[in-house]
Amino acid sequence: MNAEESDRCQSCGNRLRLGQRFRPTQVLGEGGFGRTFLAWDEAATPPQRCVIKQILRSRGSRDQDLAEAKRLVQLGQHPQIPSLIAILESPRDLCLVQTYVAGRTLAQRLETDGPFTEKQVRSLLLALLPVLQFIHDQKIIHRDIKPENVVLPEGNGSPVLVDFGAARPVLTASELEQTGTIIGSAGYAAPEQALGKAVPASDLYSLGLTCLNLLTGVHPFDLYSVAADRWVWQTLTPVSVSDALARVLNRLTARALRSRYPTATAALADLAPAGLMPQRRVKPNLVKRSPDPWRCTQIWPTPGRVVNALAIAPTGQAIATANSDSTVQLWDCPTGKVLHTFTQRLGFGEGHRDAATAVTFHPEGQTLFSASQDGTVKQWELAGYRLRQSFQQPGWQVTTIALSSDGAQLIAADTTGRISLWQVDEGKRLVDLTRHSGAVNSVQVNPQDNRLVSVGEAGTLRLWVLPTGQLLHTWTAKTGLRAVVLNTVEPAVVTGDRRGSVRLWSLTDFDQHQQLGQHQDAVSAIALSPNGRWLATGSRDREIHLWDWSGEVPRRFAVLRHDWAVCDLVFTPDSQTLISSAADETIRFWQAVADG
Image (cartoon, rainbow, N blue to C red; front, side, top):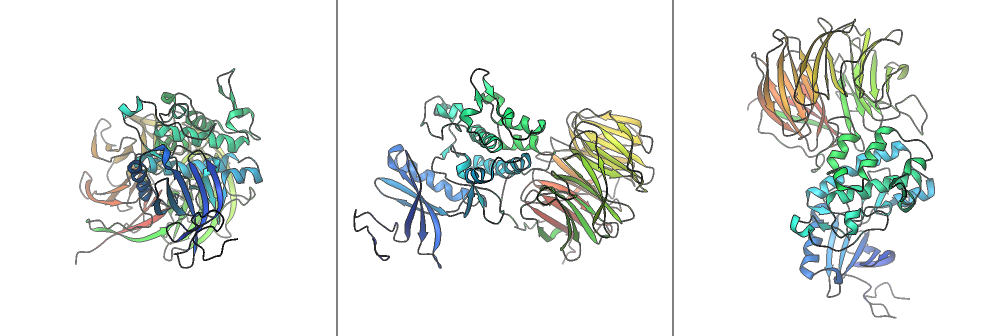
């Protein structure tokens, strides 16, 4: 038995404290390149638990190991990666000391609770793919993603990616021509990684196999049919998996690099509705001051959920949000307090079963409509917070909704290209408009003449008449259109596309259109102030462009910024405030600031 104050073991003489502050207490794991210990940081007040990853010197030079360890300092700035506390080196090994994350690994969760549901796996991918993109943006490959290296923190926090002991820089083209070190966990390493030539897509392969293991409870070795030369995981899941998620998982785990997703961002684009996912992570909850005369005046954090869509009540007193965790929330605008959350609990209740994608208030302000990837639109009574009725869309994954000016007709569009017109009072589907090819991404109704505009992933902009659904005109763009807004003051429509282009289309001369500006990534949201003065366009590039439409053509007036991709935009009824949501898990308020 060693005394608490001892620095060396009385039996073997080895150090009991590393760096005169870290005391190892338990071996967590052991492999060919070193060991991992649970330890106490006795220099902290009070002492804190930490993890020590011992890396043997035999696998690389001292300078190389030290340089790569220091890269983890930057990675540790991400909230889903443990922070690096210290780097301890000796002639025989290198020790990385990182913060300890209390919780269960995915492997432990699978062992105790059984296979994951589709919703849980989808949520896991939405949480981890941005982390991988962040890592790969730093030119690092993790190389050992598996269920044992993802921790679900206590308190339902976001999953944390751990154990960067095998991480290495992305290889150059010339380096890929040479055989490198073969590392990774058996069954989870990509074919090219098994040859010592790991690339960023190798991490995506490992994450995909991790998901297959979680869905089936079966090790990857037993999920591949050599005779059929393909994965057979879908026959081993306890419950069926949707075609949409299966396509994503099959592409993540494609053995040929050319068939696999090249980046985590590309996988996110297929996994979620257009424009809802982050591009890169910066420090959360950080207000960035803009040199423009519009300022961020409030930030409402939404930890653990991304607000996919916003709506503001006709009175301006309440805001509704459609969230990535399937909840719909009602907020008090003056105080920022959540008045109510419409949700399911433990699979029961009237809430949505998948991510909520759209939300809108009835013109009279007494009810709220929400849409979801589960294929439903729900109408909620705000007095008593109860479900009035549910509309089952014939297709799947409702992308956007709108109401006629009197609230009598509901317009719901989905990923199949269908726009359904519903009679609200009777809950009856009147007609399906099926002229779009591919997902319909956005719709809007002109409250003055009940004309409907819609845009789709196939690059079409269509103008319809309500309530009949007669098609008046179709414009064709060169790429997928993601967002649309109709100006009721100037007879024009503004669209944003997946390449970031913002374009103005005339409603008086159907042949007249022009490009207004360009974002660096796909446009994800467009909003117009009720007085027609301000136009706002949001993008996956994190920027909001504010346009002054006091003349015939909008002119860019200011650039506002979030930390991640912008999801949705809405102006308050008085046109004085712009409200935005983004994948940085915040809602932000922007207002004009008077000079002086």
